[in-house]
Image (cartoon, rainbow, N blue to C red; front, side):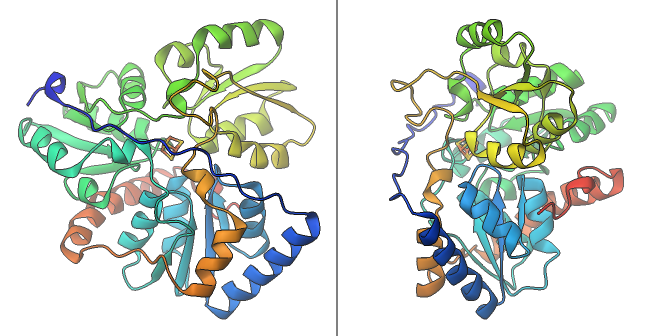
Length: 354
Ligand code: SF4
């Protein structure tokens, strides 16, 4: 099975959810209610940087964690709490369950998926791996438990470069999935011999290089921060390419006063918190007619809100379950990544960065 013969499934991108506007008093009341629910259920909140700002601040206020997917996995595994409430997309809840089979893992909306995960069906992916047995299989965290179970390594964008570099130095050839843009960025930086599953993220795919050039001309002193899931001609214009954690760090540490940011706009909450006086500008996307109707906002991340979080805690629903045989296989490449991170001190500065 060649890369050219892979037929990706058509992905239905939902409209960005429209949650009713809440007054500050309503937000405070809901947060109080959820805090009490979390306490009563021995639960901790683990939220991704792309989720709603109210959820991120609630996670911080209740002793939870706001982080990228690597830190979310690590934080969840280190908790004594019996329940992990994962605000993010489905693969993040699955990863938490894979690492913590004895814990209850729930999510505000189990339909919150990811175009990378949806675009890499396990059966087809497995056939692709079977056709290339001489390759090490390295999959991005944005995949189903079944795809992880078929892999040798799981990586996040925060750790992909050092792991692929390590494998390349050992002379390994790599089969990479599912994000072709991130994969080709990793290949350019590491020089590794790689073949790619041809998936992409509907959010990052929409960042447009010509419009970005125009925005840079309007803001000549701004630094350009780009997530490596973006197309190469956008990455080529970046001052910093990196994971969500790396981009937040850049805003806090660089001398520039303005930043053009090419990743999901949810990240602005943490950036603004780290550097309140700096100006953040969303990188241009294809706009309303784009594949991703929400432009720089992931529609699946948008399915997480205070409202449905409270409902799920009340109704005791939306628990993640994973087949035990799949879990036993999937935990191996995830644990390999976490062990590699611990051994090389990668990302530890952000541990539990609430
Ligand atoms: S932003 Fe892209 S990679 Fe992230 S969850 Fe949404 S679709 Fe997936």
